[in-house]
Image 1 (cartoon, each protein chain N blue to C red):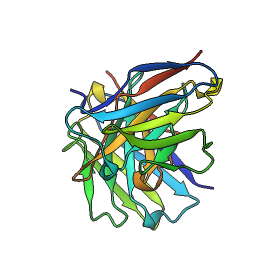
Image 2 (image 1 turned 90 degrees about the vertical axis):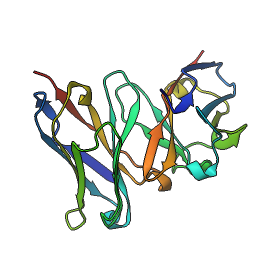
Image 3 (image 1 turned 45 degrees about the vertical axis):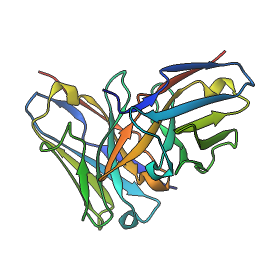
Image 4 (image 1 turned 120 degrees about the horizontal axis):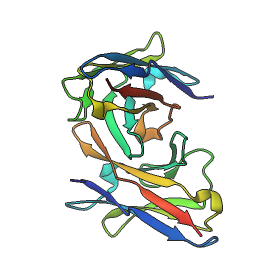
Length: 116
Length: 110
């Protein structure tokens, strides 16, 4: 069974940093591109970042470019998102997704709250 | 400015058919945008219904189908049921590694 489990969410002050993790199982992690998608409270979905299977290609939405860093460890079947210089508008549930073009599989999400 | 457009809301009668669309503020959607459709109920993570325009994800009933209609990606739901009442989101590949979601459609079944 395919599983994606996000962790690392929590409360952080504006300007602070937080790191998210996504542990996957049930498929060959190293064969798939991965993504982070977020959803602010009561709002729609926003694609945040993607990373290719070998980490050779990395992309970011303009809203997070220069502040967020996506990475992966294929040996540990894990995806990461390092978030720096956090702003109130980064408050959202963050979802880990397996490759969109092959039928995205979603995690349950982890809530990040940026507030003083 | 919303680059990817969806109807904010739609209503369908039980047993009826509804087509939701996903367009571009400028230009037409084609298969090259690899449109996907997602369903989300309150408090739950989204689930993938359709990917690559018209491929149903595993376990998705064949009442759900995807296509390109009139320059937009389309999600058609036939024989609408009460538990189809959800938010529906599309996503398009814009090139250069960038994906963009539509704003979502709130579907009411009544």
